[in-house]
Structure formats: C-alpha cells, structure tokens
Length: 397
Ligand SMILES: *Cc1c(COP(=O)(O)O)cnc(C)c1O
Image (cartoon, rainbow, N blue to C red; front, side):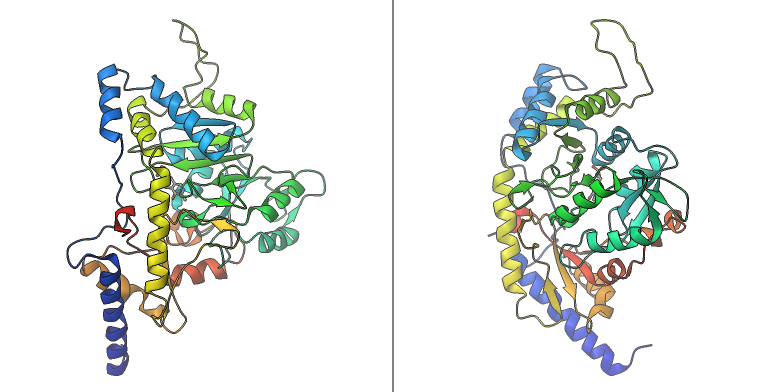
C-alpha cells in the first residue's frame, strides 16, 4: 500500500511526464509507436525490380550489392548477409572457434538473442556487468572479475570455478551507443580470445571515427523491422579477415561446395543466407542511412533539450568520443523517481505513447538463472530505471 500523499506525488509526476512526452513527439493525439521503419527512398522500386527479375530467393545480384555497400559503409573488408541478427551471431561464434562446453562473456543487460546465440553454439553465456556511461560492458570490472575467477597463464583462459574454457567476449552496443572498445580489445588480446561485437542496434554508430562492428574479430548487425534500417528480417557479419568471411559464407549456405550442378556439402551447414528480395529492400534502405542518422540525431537533441528542465528524468546522451546512431532514445529515472518506472510505462502506453523498459537482465530469466556470472549491480540498477521512448526517424521535425 502507498500512502495518499505518495499517490498524489506519483500521479503528478507520471501525468506531467506523459504530457511532456506527448508535447515533444509533436503529435497531439493518436498512437505513437516506439520505432517504425521509414520507406521514403527507392524501396518500392528495388523490391519491384527484384520481383520482376524472378530472383527472389537465395541467389541474385541484390545480395552481392547489399554486402558490398554495407562493407564499404562500415569500412570492413568483408560482409556476409544472413537471415537475421541472431543467425549472424550464431555463425560468428562458430567461425570464431567457440565450441560446445565453452563459456562466452556476454553482458547481462542485453537482448536475449545475444545469450541464445551462445547457447545455439553449444556454449554457456557468462554474464558480466555494464557501465552507466555507455550502457555496455564495463571492461575494467570485467578484468577484475576475470582476475578473480579465471586462469589465463597458459595461453588459454579457463574459468576456475567451472573448469570451462572462456572462448570469446561479446560486447553489445546498447540502443546504438558505442561500448568503449579499447580496453575490451586489450583484454581479449591478454586472454587470447576473440571479441565479437553484437552491433545489431548500432549500424551507423562510430567510436573515434571508426564504425561499430569493425573493432572486433567480427561484428554483426540486425535488419529486423524495428532496427535503424530493415530488410524485413535480416542480418550481417562484417570482418576484415578473409578466411573468417569465407568460412561464414560457406556455413550459412548449407556448406555447399560451389558447383554447376552437383550437390556436395562438406559439413553440417545452415540455411542462413539472406534472400535476394530482402536484400533489394536493404539496398534501398542503406541508401537512406545518412538521412535516417541525421533525423535520429535531431530527434535526440530535441528530447535532450525538451527534458533538460524535467526533474527526475535524464535523457541518455552518447558516450564521449562516440557518435551514436540514437536508434532508441532512453530516459533514466533518478533515485527519487525510479520506483515510478512501471507507473510511467503504464500511463504512457495507456496514452498511446509506446514506451518500453530495457530488457530484464539475462540472469533473471529462468533459462539463464544458473549461468555463471559476475556481480551485476549496475545492470540491475539500469534495468530498474531505463525507459525507451518513441524514436522513429519521422518524429524529427
Ligand atoms: C535485434 C537484436 C539482435 C537480434 O537480431 P534479429 O535480427 O532480431 O535476430 C541481437 N542482439 C541485439 C542486441 C538486438 O537488438
């Protein structure tokens, strides 16, 4: 039970938040989604062209074109387009040498696909904490944690508590905000393990001028309908390593040996290739990326400015040296107001303003309760107070 005065305070805060948000989205009434795609370029034209060509499935020129343009755009040497971001992660983990029974370092504060991809590879996610300034993996804390729990003196990193090998580190760029990659890459080198970036949300984001997804051994993107650009469903792996790219391409095309008519597959591969029809949409969307990034930045600035005098709420701002794509804007409730989180969510959604909490941390999900983990106070703290607010590019005025 809450007291009458607490209820009044609660209602006043929640109501004024909803009012402010309604004002800032610039639409007096009606439903405002969290994120909707924007098809204002050649989307119809290229999809039609693809249909007219008859090449809608696993072969066709749009896939090659999409891969080449994406690689150029990120400054990566190679790109392999696949059916979704989860498949991209699954493939990247296998190609990076993650084996059944290994452990993979993953933030507790991520979308469930990051942990699931590790499980698909037969490995076990090992959850680590995040930092408030990036919402991503805290490298210094991770190093401390591994100093206490792992042994990497023999050139191979072993979790002393479980006896399992630590085979990769998978940082994730939350809502497009770049993780501080420098210390993580250094840690990966010290441990002798690859760093694979879950850049599913971070297409167009950069750190010190370099694109997210290109820092680690491999990086992955998602082109799901809610991401900054979409292919309906889709994903991609980027890497500068020709051998890894070749292996990823082979594994995602049922491990078929290219041949004019013969069906020979030399291992158990996956049917993960991106369809040409999706890639046609992707080519048109990629051409819009700069425009979308500009709109997203404008919307973020509008929110930052619009909430600057609002007590109890802070808009998350991109980390220093980073350029975020501002895929989703987030508010953080301060200590005095974080217990209002669910009321804010309830009231804003009831008012037609689609807001969502950040994901429940992975160690609090039933299937990952028993997974190895570090102490996770920051992940839990962020989870208790972060709310995503409507962020479609078309809201920028
Ligand atoms: C969207 C997303 C994925 C998965 O991408 P899909 O294309 O939906 O499979 C993975 N990780 C993160 C952080 C994501 O946001």
